[in-house]
Image (tube, rainbow, N blue to C red; front, side, top):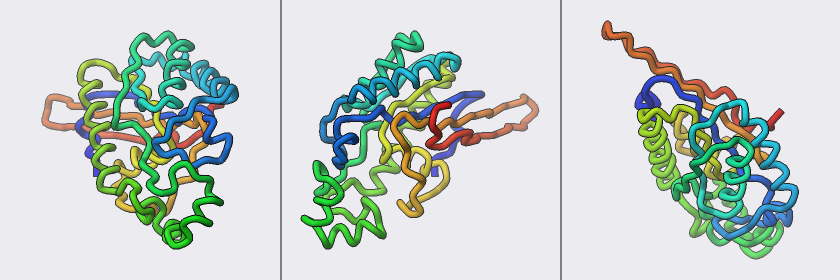
Length: 219
């Protein structure tokens, strides 16, 4: 379980899934396969940027995959953020032998793996990224965020993917299983963690970290 007490002081940390990609539109299991935003995805990213304008972001971190990077740069233009920093740890999970297939194709071509997938999610798919690695990557993201907050960048947005976003959240809850799944996040849905870790100087160290939103559509 990630210890959020490592994040110093107060912080507003946001995580967003990328806008609609060509693979999303076509019902493809993308994993780490390349896919760009659709026109609808770009529109979603602009709407997200408008929503984030009032958040006074200091920095945007992004998965280097094109669909996330493009989303991040659109949001940066809308918000006036000048620093967009790629981070490999925010990339999507490796979806193994299902990558590049539709769910219908995956069921037809890999019936045994498909049956296991129903109960174990990606942990049961050959060649897919395992939970131990996902937790390790999530821990590195939280470690970087703690470092950035300590440097004074207290309002950070991370642009990532629906699969990995599950583990950004799960790593703070002590979960070591895909099940139960969180409701699948829509394109440009936002998760928001508010941190208030306060040292008073009398030996008392207050700690509060609250998920304000998880996979919430922008309103």
